Length: 198
Length: 198
DNA sequence: AAGGCCATACCGACTGGTTAGTATGTTGCC
DNA sequence: GGCAACATACTAACCAGTCGGTATGGCCTT
Image (tube, rainbow over all chains, first blue to last red; front, side):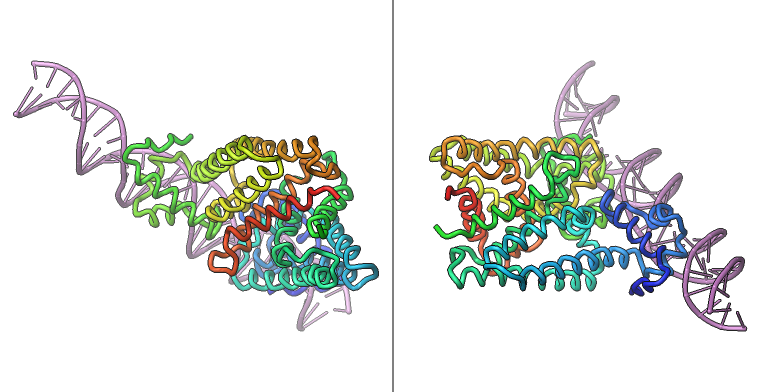
């Protein structure tokens, strides 16, 4: 179990998490040794095991952080102003944007989730499912009120769209030709177009 | 380097590859030991290293196999009969179908590619890019002849769609409520709808 | 047809290196 | 003096790959 870094004075705990995130994204969980993490953070193992219960724990913390962030934002957008079409578009663009802004987390998420211990894996999946369900209910709402065509199953659309989002980490480059905003807008457009009524 | 299993009498080599595929998909590359692979195949390490140069080599062989298969099929469909809309729909549905039929390979692909040695990783990426380019040129063709709207960038559409395809491995279950054909049809529909002109 | 020769296919013990995690200090603040 | 925040040294386990060895069967030569 992780004691959540005790908020006060735990700059070391945060530095450890940040360096771990960077290294996990760069080399993957298994290829990153605890020794490398503590060296990158300028401390020793004692410090790491003081704040985190295990290497696994560290990985779990990465997930928890990004999930909290995205869930919060989706809640705000889904419950906000505008037609369901507008809200879905905004939500879709936002998740793309924040995924790119936290590209390291995105990479780790989909490469290394299965390395988590079964119980932690289960916990993460449950959180993730709740997130997807919020997204899905937006689609259902649009189908009910006639904004979207009723052909596609909402849950399949969610898996379809988030597949694309999760894979950003494999091809998006910060120094590439496309800005995060451009990708966000196009992905959201593609989603909305695929739901538009004939 | 792998000597490709010498075609004749190498049932052992094939069994090793099959068991490795299964185990890599189940536990991931790093968490699968060479010892486990050879035990599952009912041989010993000597046999494995007789046919394959390294554990890495084995992983590379998995990729090579599925890439060959999919490239072949896409070539046939892209160069076949029908309007560009029909061909793209067929190609999209087909890649979903074969991805589900070879779900173990799909899982490994997306989870473990970055574990390959840099050179092999590069080779696989190059193959993959050629494959994506074939797909992209179908979209470009449709945009040129007015079948598809010209808004979205073809390369982004490809990344968008294949994100969804690669992620099948994380959520699709054979014993789930959806047949592979259903998913294939819906995914292809979603793609075509998102390209349809207003 | 018999004997020699050699390649292929595999065995299994061993090695050298790495790794997560632990046990036991040490320091400095309240 | 006591506890939080670390450091240091260590261990026990694991693992990819190696290497010397054996069994089998085909082919060439005489």
